[in-house]
Length: 316
Image 1: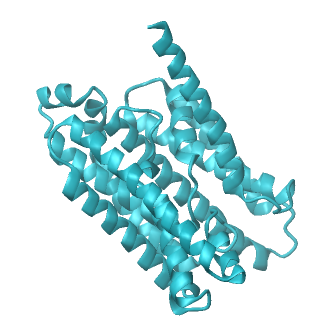
Image 2: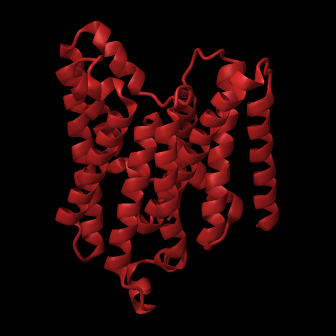
Protein backbone atom coordinates (compact mmCIF):
# COMPACT_ATOMS: atom_id res chain seq x y z
CA UNK A 1 0.00 0.00 0.00
CA UNK A 2 2.84 2.36 0.78
CA UNK A 3 4.36 1.70 -2.64
CA UNK A 4 1.05 2.58 -4.28
CA UNK A 5 0.83 5.78 -2.25
CA UNK A 6 4.39 6.63 -3.25
CA UNK A 7 3.59 6.12 -6.94
CA UNK A 8 0.46 8.25 -6.64
CA UNK A 9 2.45 10.95 -4.85
CA UNK A 10 5.12 10.98 -7.57
CA UNK A 11 2.48 11.16 -10.32
CA UNK A 12 0.64 14.00 -8.55
CA UNK A 13 3.92 15.88 -7.99
CA UNK A 14 4.96 15.41 -11.63
CA UNK A 15 1.62 16.74 -12.89
CA UNK A 16 1.82 19.75 -10.57
CA UNK A 17 5.36 20.56 -11.77
CA UNK A 18 4.26 20.14 -15.39
CA UNK A 19 1.26 22.40 -14.81
CA UNK A 20 3.44 25.09 -13.21
CA UNK A 21 6.27 25.05 -15.76
CA UNK A 22 4.79 24.04 -19.13
CA UNK A 23 5.07 26.73 -21.83
CA UNK A 24 5.93 29.56 -19.42
CA UNK A 25 6.94 32.76 -21.19
CA UNK A 26 6.89 35.16 -18.26
CA UNK A 27 7.68 33.58 -14.89
CA UNK A 28 6.79 36.74 -12.94
CA UNK A 29 3.29 36.77 -14.42
CA UNK A 30 2.50 33.08 -14.96
CA UNK A 31 3.94 31.39 -11.88
CA UNK A 32 1.88 33.24 -9.19
CA UNK A 33 -1.34 32.69 -11.15
CA UNK A 34 -0.58 29.02 -11.73
CA UNK A 35 0.37 28.52 -8.08
CA UNK A 36 -2.99 29.96 -7.09
CA UNK A 37 -4.82 27.70 -9.55
CA UNK A 38 -2.99 24.53 -8.53
CA UNK A 39 -3.47 25.36 -4.84
CA UNK A 40 -7.21 25.68 -5.45
CA UNK A 41 -7.20 22.31 -7.21
CA UNK A 42 -5.31 20.62 -4.39
CA UNK A 43 -7.53 22.07 -1.64
CA UNK A 44 -10.77 21.41 -3.53
CA UNK A 45 -9.76 17.90 -4.52
CA UNK A 46 -8.62 17.02 -1.00
CA UNK A 47 -11.77 18.44 0.58
CA UNK A 48 -14.06 16.54 -1.79
CA UNK A 49 -12.06 13.31 -1.34
CA UNK A 50 -12.09 13.57 2.46
CA UNK A 51 -15.78 14.38 2.68
CA UNK A 52 -16.83 11.63 0.24
CA UNK A 53 -14.86 8.85 1.94
CA UNK A 54 -16.16 9.89 5.37
CA UNK A 55 -19.75 10.16 4.09
CA UNK A 56 -19.62 6.76 2.40
CA UNK A 57 -18.21 5.18 5.56
CA UNK A 58 -21.06 6.60 7.63
CA UNK A 59 -23.75 5.53 5.15
CA UNK A 60 -22.08 2.19 4.26
CA UNK A 61 -22.70 2.88 0.59
CA UNK A 62 -20.02 3.51 -2.06
CA UNK A 63 -22.46 5.05 -4.50
CA UNK A 64 -23.69 7.90 -2.29
CA UNK A 65 -21.85 11.23 -2.07
CA UNK A 66 -22.37 14.31 0.16
CA UNK A 67 -24.03 16.05 -2.77
CA UNK A 68 -27.09 13.87 -2.20
CA UNK A 69 -28.25 16.15 0.63
CA UNK A 70 -28.63 19.02 -1.85
CA UNK A 71 -25.63 21.25 -1.11
CA UNK A 72 -24.68 21.57 -4.79
CA UNK A 73 -28.24 22.53 -5.72
CA UNK A 74 -28.32 25.01 -2.83
CA UNK A 75 -25.13 26.65 -4.13
CA UNK A 76 -26.70 27.17 -7.57
CA UNK A 77 -29.88 28.47 -5.91
CA UNK A 78 -27.99 31.05 -3.84
CA UNK A 79 -26.04 32.30 -6.86
CA UNK A 80 -29.21 32.44 -8.97
CA UNK A 81 -31.15 34.27 -6.26
CA UNK A 82 -28.42 36.90 -5.78
CA UNK A 83 -28.37 37.69 -9.50
CA UNK A 84 -32.18 37.47 -9.76
CA UNK A 85 -32.77 39.79 -6.80
CA UNK A 86 -29.83 42.21 -6.96
CA UNK A 87 -28.32 41.88 -10.44
CA UNK A 88 -24.99 40.56 -11.68
CA UNK A 89 -23.19 43.82 -10.78
CA UNK A 90 -24.38 43.95 -7.17
CA UNK A 91 -22.00 43.84 -4.18
CA UNK A 92 -22.97 40.28 -3.20
CA UNK A 93 -22.10 39.01 -6.68
CA UNK A 94 -19.05 41.11 -7.62
CA UNK A 95 -17.26 40.99 -4.26
CA UNK A 96 -15.79 37.49 -4.05
CA UNK A 97 -15.19 37.66 -0.31
CA UNK A 98 -18.81 38.53 0.44
CA UNK A 99 -20.08 35.97 -2.06
CA UNK A 100 -17.89 33.21 -0.63
CA UNK A 101 -18.78 33.93 2.99
CA UNK A 102 -22.51 34.24 2.25
CA UNK A 103 -22.69 31.12 0.09
CA UNK A 104 -20.63 28.89 2.38
CA UNK A 105 -22.50 30.15 5.47
CA UNK A 106 -25.91 29.41 3.93
CA UNK A 107 -24.81 25.91 2.91
CA UNK A 108 -23.30 25.09 6.31
CA UNK A 109 -26.33 26.45 8.21
CA UNK A 110 -28.68 24.43 5.99
CA UNK A 111 -26.71 21.24 6.58
CA UNK A 112 -26.55 21.83 10.34
CA UNK A 113 -30.30 22.49 10.54
CA UNK A 114 -30.97 19.36 8.51
CA UNK A 115 -28.80 17.25 10.80
CA UNK A 116 -30.24 18.80 13.98
CA UNK A 117 -33.87 18.37 12.97
CA UNK A 118 -33.72 14.94 11.37
CA UNK A 119 -30.79 12.99 12.77
CA UNK A 120 -32.06 10.78 15.54
CA UNK A 121 -30.88 7.51 16.95
CA UNK A 122 -30.95 4.56 14.61
CA UNK A 123 -29.88 3.73 11.08
CA UNK A 124 -33.34 4.30 9.63
CA UNK A 125 -33.19 7.96 10.58
CA UNK A 126 -29.85 8.34 8.77
CA UNK A 127 -31.43 7.11 5.54
CA UNK A 128 -34.45 9.33 6.21
CA UNK A 129 -31.98 12.21 6.37
CA UNK A 130 -30.65 11.25 2.93
CA UNK A 131 -34.19 11.02 1.54
CA UNK A 132 -35.05 14.49 2.85
CA UNK A 133 -31.78 15.77 1.37
CA UNK A 134 -32.77 14.45 -2.06
CA UNK A 135 -36.16 16.16 -1.78
CA UNK A 136 -34.54 19.46 -0.80
CA UNK A 137 -32.02 19.14 -3.65
CA UNK A 138 -34.82 18.68 -6.17
CA UNK A 139 -36.72 21.61 -4.64
CA UNK A 140 -33.66 23.89 -4.83
CA UNK A 141 -33.05 22.89 -8.46
CA UNK A 142 -36.67 23.68 -9.36
CA UNK A 143 -36.48 27.12 -7.71
CA UNK A 144 -33.21 27.85 -9.52
CA UNK A 145 -34.71 26.88 -12.87
CA UNK A 146 -37.79 29.02 -12.21
CA UNK A 147 -35.69 32.12 -11.49
CA UNK A 148 -33.35 31.43 -14.42
CA UNK A 149 -36.33 31.44 -16.78
CA UNK A 150 -37.46 34.84 -15.50
CA UNK A 151 -34.17 36.75 -15.46
CA UNK A 152 -32.68 38.71 -18.33
CA UNK A 153 -30.70 36.54 -20.81
CA UNK A 154 -27.56 38.60 -20.17
CA UNK A 155 -27.93 38.03 -16.44
CA UNK A 156 -28.44 34.33 -17.10
CA UNK A 157 -24.93 34.16 -18.57
CA UNK A 158 -23.56 35.17 -15.16
CA UNK A 159 -25.59 32.41 -13.54
CA UNK A 160 -24.41 29.89 -16.11
CA UNK A 161 -20.76 30.74 -15.42
CA UNK A 162 -21.30 29.87 -11.76
CA UNK A 163 -23.01 26.55 -12.44
CA UNK A 164 -19.69 24.91 -13.41
CA UNK A 165 -16.49 24.66 -11.39
CA UNK A 166 -13.71 27.01 -12.51
CA UNK A 167 -10.07 27.11 -11.39
CA UNK A 168 -8.98 29.86 -13.75
CA UNK A 169 -9.85 32.88 -11.59
CA UNK A 170 -9.45 32.10 -7.90
CA UNK A 171 -8.96 34.89 -5.36
CA UNK A 172 -5.86 34.50 -3.15
CA UNK A 173 -7.59 35.77 0.00
CA UNK A 174 -10.51 33.37 -0.40
CA UNK A 175 -8.06 30.55 -1.12
CA UNK A 176 -6.19 31.29 2.10
CA UNK A 177 -9.41 31.29 4.14
CA UNK A 178 -10.47 28.01 2.54
CA UNK A 179 -7.05 26.51 3.26
CA UNK A 180 -7.31 27.41 6.94
CA UNK A 181 -10.79 25.90 7.24
CA UNK A 182 -9.63 22.79 5.37
CA UNK A 183 -6.61 22.26 7.62
CA UNK A 184 -8.67 22.57 10.80
CA UNK A 185 -11.46 20.25 9.67
CA UNK A 186 -9.18 17.60 8.14
CA UNK A 187 -7.05 17.57 11.29
CA UNK A 188 -10.24 16.79 13.20
CA UNK A 189 -11.11 14.01 10.73
CA UNK A 190 -7.65 12.47 11.07
CA UNK A 191 -8.08 12.56 14.83
CA UNK A 192 -11.23 10.46 14.36
CA UNK A 193 -9.74 8.19 11.68
CA UNK A 194 -9.61 5.22 14.07
CA UNK A 195 -13.34 5.63 14.64
CA UNK A 196 -13.86 5.49 10.88
CA UNK A 197 -12.25 2.04 10.76
CA UNK A 198 -14.76 0.83 13.35
CA UNK A 199 -17.74 2.66 11.81
CA UNK A 200 -17.13 0.80 8.55
CA UNK A 201 -18.20 -2.38 10.39
CA UNK A 202 -21.72 -1.03 10.92
CA UNK A 203 -23.64 0.73 13.68
CA UNK A 204 -24.24 -2.30 15.90
CA UNK A 205 -20.65 -3.51 15.75
CA UNK A 206 -19.33 0.01 16.41
CA UNK A 207 -21.53 0.36 19.51
CA UNK A 208 -20.48 -3.08 20.76
CA UNK A 209 -16.84 -2.05 20.40
CA UNK A 210 -17.41 1.00 22.60
CA UNK A 211 -17.91 3.79 20.05
CA UNK A 212 -20.39 6.54 20.95
CA UNK A 213 -22.00 6.15 17.54
CA UNK A 214 -24.40 9.11 17.51
CA UNK A 215 -21.79 11.50 18.95
CA UNK A 216 -19.12 10.56 16.39
CA UNK A 217 -21.44 10.41 13.37
CA UNK A 218 -23.02 13.80 14.08
CA UNK A 219 -19.62 15.46 14.25
CA UNK A 220 -18.37 13.73 11.15
CA UNK A 221 -21.47 14.86 9.24
CA UNK A 222 -20.78 18.44 10.35
CA UNK A 223 -17.21 18.13 9.06
CA UNK A 224 -18.52 16.75 5.75
CA UNK A 225 -20.93 19.68 5.42
CA UNK A 226 -18.15 22.22 6.08
CA UNK A 227 -15.72 20.64 3.59
CA UNK A 228 -18.31 20.35 0.83
CA UNK A 229 -19.64 23.88 1.44
CA UNK A 230 -16.30 25.70 1.36
CA UNK A 231 -14.96 23.72 -1.62
CA UNK A 232 -18.14 24.34 -3.61
CA UNK A 233 -18.23 28.02 -2.67
CA UNK A 234 -14.57 28.34 -3.74
CA UNK A 235 -14.74 26.94 -7.29
CA UNK A 236 -18.28 25.70 -7.93
CA UNK A 237 -19.96 22.28 -7.94
CA UNK A 238 -18.23 19.13 -9.26
CA UNK A 239 -20.88 16.47 -8.92
CA UNK A 240 -19.12 13.18 -9.60
CA UNK A 241 -15.53 13.89 -8.54
CA UNK A 242 -15.96 12.46 -5.05
CA UNK A 243 -17.65 9.30 -6.31
CA UNK A 244 -14.88 8.72 -8.84
CA UNK A 245 -11.83 9.29 -6.63
CA UNK A 246 -13.23 7.50 -3.57
CA UNK A 247 -14.02 4.31 -5.47
CA UNK A 248 -10.69 4.37 -7.29
CA UNK A 249 -9.00 4.69 -3.88
CA UNK A 250 -10.97 1.70 -2.56
CA UNK A 251 -9.91 -0.41 -5.55
CA UNK A 252 -6.26 0.60 -5.26
CA UNK A 253 -5.82 0.20 -1.52
CA UNK A 254 -8.14 -2.75 -0.77
CA UNK A 255 -7.91 -2.15 2.98
CA UNK A 256 -10.17 -1.10 5.82
CA UNK A 257 -7.65 1.43 7.21
CA UNK A 258 -8.96 4.88 6.45
CA UNK A 259 -5.57 6.56 6.78
CA UNK A 260 -4.50 4.80 3.56
CA UNK A 261 -7.88 5.22 1.86
CA UNK A 262 -8.06 8.96 2.65
CA UNK A 263 -4.48 9.53 1.45
CA UNK A 264 -5.10 7.63 -1.78
CA UNK A 265 -8.38 9.44 -2.42
CA UNK A 266 -6.71 12.84 -1.97
CA UNK A 267 -3.86 11.94 -4.33
CA UNK A 268 -6.22 10.52 -6.99
CA UNK A 269 -8.34 13.67 -6.71
CA UNK A 270 -5.31 15.92 -7.20
CA UNK A 271 -4.19 13.84 -10.19
CA UNK A 272 -7.67 14.03 -11.72
CA UNK A 273 -8.00 17.80 -11.29
CA UNK A 274 -4.46 18.85 -12.26
CA UNK A 275 -4.25 16.35 -15.13
CA UNK A 276 -7.75 17.27 -16.27
CA UNK A 277 -6.93 20.99 -16.20
CA UNK A 278 -3.82 20.34 -18.31
CA UNK A 279 -5.98 18.53 -20.86
CA UNK A 280 -8.56 21.33 -20.83
CA UNK A 281 -5.94 24.04 -21.35
CA UNK A 282 -3.54 22.30 -23.76
CA UNK A 283 -5.80 20.01 -25.80
CA UNK A 284 -9.29 21.56 -25.66
CA UNK A 285 -7.95 25.16 -25.52
CA UNK A 286 -10.32 26.04 -22.65
CA UNK A 287 -13.36 25.28 -24.83
CA UNK A 288 -14.77 22.78 -22.30
CA UNK A 289 -14.97 23.27 -18.50
CA UNK A 290 -13.03 20.76 -16.42
CA UNK A 291 -16.14 19.93 -14.39
CA UNK A 292 -17.92 18.75 -17.56
CA UNK A 293 -15.15 16.24 -18.32
CA UNK A 294 -15.01 14.99 -14.73
CA UNK A 295 -18.79 14.73 -14.47
CA UNK A 296 -18.88 12.78 -17.75
CA UNK A 297 -16.24 10.32 -16.55
CA UNK A 298 -17.81 10.13 -13.09
CA UNK A 299 -21.27 9.61 -14.55
CA UNK A 300 -20.03 6.71 -16.68
CA UNK A 301 -18.35 5.20 -13.62
CA UNK A 302 -21.55 5.70 -11.62
CA UNK A 303 -23.50 3.71 -14.22
CA UNK A 304 -20.83 1.01 -14.08
CA UNK A 305 -21.20 0.78 -10.29
CA UNK A 306 -24.98 0.55 -10.60
CA UNK A 307 -24.74 -2.25 -13.17
CA UNK A 308 -22.11 -4.02 -11.05
CA UNK A 309 -24.30 -3.90 -7.94
CA UNK A 310 -27.33 -4.96 -9.96
CA UNK A 311 -25.45 -8.01 -11.24
CA UNK A 312 -24.54 -8.98 -7.67
CA UNK A 313 -28.16 -8.71 -6.53
CA UNK A 314 -29.41 -10.78 -9.48
CA UNK A 315 -26.89 -13.55 -8.76
CA UNK A 316 -27.78 -13.62 -5.07
